[in-house]
Structure formats: structure tokens, C-alpha cells
Image (cartoon, rainbow, N blue to C red; front, side):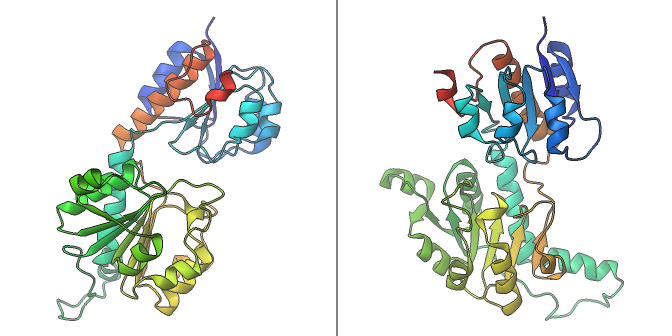
Length: 324
């Protein structure tokens, strides 16, 4: 018999075809978040739950179906799932690593360039029919080529950002909990520094750490105050890593010059003043938003879910202790 799977929101067509062929699939047909009660109702009697980063899967939801065999997350991160509770209940949790590395790195660069060259401000200015011709002081921005790039965290996505920076002849600093070997640093053309030094020396700071109890508000008022008043901060990781209220203050009072953001503390809501700040480029969580990447993510999530439902070890298991 095919396993029963509940999906919290429709995925790309290829991924949906895999799920329909190999499972008894039920899913949310509306393009909106489900409430907790709707998720609880949806997982009643199913074998697998395939959820999104926007779904909070806590112990109450997990307890609603004691026979649940897997929670497959359509994301690299899994901070939306109570993994400790899932492990205690012997429920495997999976994610979709690797497939969105280059796409998210591209997005970080899109935000960096858009912020540095004030592309969004210029676009809005032209659309408002205010542009009356070229001027020598019009929308002056910052040079990216030859500037210093600081990376907070140095995992796959940060390393992809660093590779792109080499084409812009940038000096690349990084901070990471674990330092690379001297040979690896030399091969990648990067220099290790403390986080404070990365913040102080960089013209552009890009955030690439995972969200956990140690990294929530890793970048707050103190850290922002260390940055150059001409600097730009980019976040394509997770919103709560930056204290959004402190960031608004820093952008308003000139502590830093620009911000390029794809993630926020309380998505989809933003700190109210952020909406009106001209020196912030604010994107609606587009990091992995290409057809190819989202399809790869969906296929991987589907395969993870189906494997666990068949009693196999899923390819991208994040809590192996659940199988002990």
C-alpha cells in the first residue's frame, strides 16, 4: 500500500507528480500558511508530514499523531521543527541541504549590488516620473570592486559568496566558529578574523550562520556600532540573527549606510519603520526562489518523506538518534 502523506503547501509540478505517484497525498490547495489546528487535522492518520520552513512543528503537533513516521522539511534549515521532541518520539526529521547553495549566494550578491548601487531607489525614482536627466551627484553609491567583504559564518553558501567575490577583486575576511586550515584559507583567498574585526574592517558584511539559541540576535546594536558608517549588511540566512529593531535604528541614525535583507524576525511582518527606509533593500525571502532550485528542493523533500515512510533511512536525516 502507498503511504499516506500530508503536505502543508503545494510544491513545484515535478515534485507533486512524485508524491502523487508514490503516495496517497493530501495537501493544502490554498496559497497560504496553515494554522496549528489545520496541520493537526491534516496529519490525522497519515504516515508522513511534508512541511515548509513557515510551518512551526512543535511537540503538540507531533503528539497528535503517535504513528507519524517522518517530518520532511522543505528547507535547509529546520529551526521551525522541535527536533528534540521529534527525536524523543522516534520521528525522523529531514531537510534539503546543498541544492540551494549557489542560488542563495546569487541572492546575497543581488542584494549587495542593489544596495551598493541604490538600484531600488533609482528604479522608484524613475517610475515616479521624477527623473529629469543625468546628474553628477545623483544616487551616489558604493564601489563593490576592490572593497572588503566580511562573512559571518563560513559554510557552503558563504563559501559560494566568497568565490563570487574573487571576480570583484575583493579582500575577503571571514569569521566562523571553526577556523579553516591555513592551506584551505590560502586556496580560497580568505583571511580569518574575530567577528568584531570582520565587522570593523568590512565594507560589506554578509550573514551566513545557522539560527539557534546562540546566534539569535548575534548582530545587535553593539555589533552594528562596530561597522563603518559607509558599510552595508546583507542577510540571506535567518531573520532573528539580526536584531531588527537595532538595525532600523542603525539605518536611521547613520551608524551604517545600507542593508540588503531577504529574511526577517517575524516573517512575513517587518519592523514597521523598515518599510519606509530608503537605505534598505527588502526582498520577500527569495533566497532559493528559482524554478530549478525549488524543484530540486521539492524532489529531495519528497524522496526523504517517501523513504522514511517505507521504513528506510532517509537520505537527509538531521536527527539520527531518532532511529536508535
